[in-house]
Length: 239
Image (cartoon, rainbow, N blue to C red; front, side, top):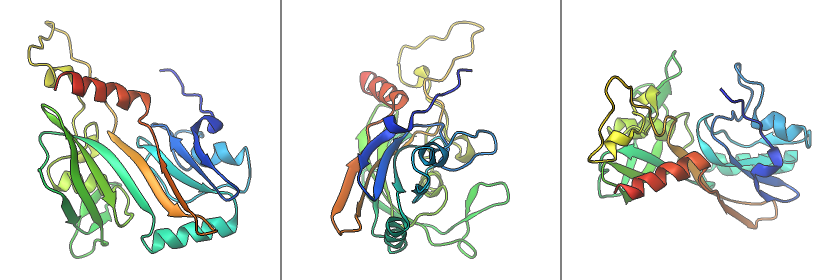
């Protein structure tokens, strides 16, 4: 398998004296990973040792990630996250036709011993996500999710709770995307196993908005990575 070579500067979509916003590629950890020494924090601390990561994205999740360059900026961002003043919008691909309405999912979550997040009304922590359909395809839906709280795996767990797990998210029951589920007249070759067109968690942090230390608004959108652009093109093609 080809090893990824990450270039920190290629990821930057916004940069000033206090903050850097990057478009994190999929398969790159935010912080140190036991199985891979490459991670966002190490890459950026090689540029400036003062960098800190202000929040986290799962390894397979792509998109907008905020880093601070000094302690004051980090504290300012942390306070906004604590007060739920940072607006983050995610896009996710789910199988089936999602509900036509906007929903507020308010289901308490806790992390189990296996690392999977489960629903627990008694011991779980408050978790709120606003979800709405963005685009319908023949067998799939692109949904927009806005987390109000910031629990681990929150969007993934809440979509699974609605019986719409994210495509490629095998931890929560999401299946990969196959050509056979897109193309009506698809014929599989005898004795040949069909390979998935998309086989990672189909979740992208599309935008982030917060205020800078000087109270100016920072708002940035991040393009889909190459693999998500390709699958979106195919979803449109066979729609």
